[in-house]
View 1 (cartoon, helix red, strand yellow):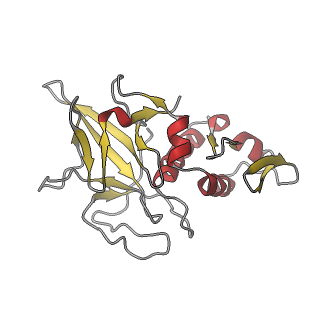
View 2 (cartoon, rainbow, N blue to C red; view 1 turned 120 degrees about the horizontal axis):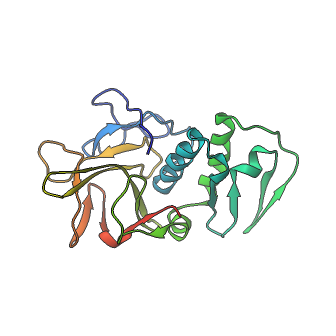
View 3 (cartoon, rainbow, N blue to C red; view 1 turned 180 degrees about the vertical axis):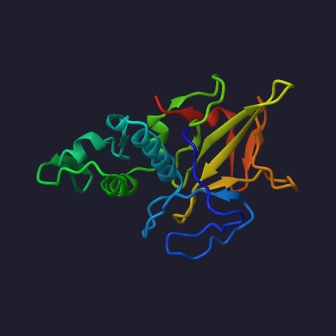
Length: 217
């Protein structure tokens, strides 16, 4: 992962409408990433946002593509060349007539469409299993469903005992600032989770199996 800008220390997590998230005890930091004015950038959407920002910032724009829940593939490559997505019922199709625009502002418009028609179910199908591989930044713990949930690994460290520690970022419902999670039960507010091979991964608002770890292909 690239470096992620953070808001000031002790910044609160806000919802898309500017109000405060009802729980302010789950985060160690807030990312300086826009959430938008609509209830769109929820958990899986935040994962896609961070993935798109990483690819956009590293000159890999043609790799920005996500599947809708119905299986339709939304590609930023086509969108920025002027094509747009028409949705009629459960059917999607590309159509000409849009403006050619590869700006970051236009990327956010594209992602709003993705967020509208994709979610944890589609993202879970898109990712590949990674629980047998060493954990890496960019990995995703995900449970597809209605609702499901997803969190992203944003940093990894190893100690002198050979143990692996990692940080997690999430959005949630309703759409809210992407934030770094605290480890439940730690009085010091640490954001460093310890990787285990048994048991469960408990986060402040969701519990995952270790086998729920996936990554983008």
